[in-house]
Image (cartoon, rainbow, N blue to C red; front, side, top):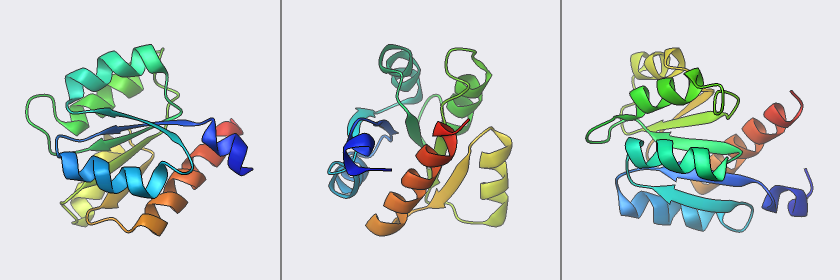
Length: 131
């Protein structure tokens, strides 16, 4: 995708840790329009309003966790088409399978390198723009 075409893409980051948003903002803001939600409940409301092209979702959050948020987004007709990249400090193969079973399109373990996350986001947005 061309850089200008990518800059039009909206990515929502859902994480209860402020520093994680700052890190992802440094890596992704030159390429995408970013928005931020601190909880699963907030994400559900904002996704309907903003219709992002991709949601990056932390698994471990208080209240409505990332897995349940992912299931709710994927099972709703208004949001089921949006690709979801699950992120977690948990990094066992079981954690990845659990995330994918919940409906995630991809999984990445924290800590996340800037280049790796840029490539993952690019790949997910490109593959879903052709569907």
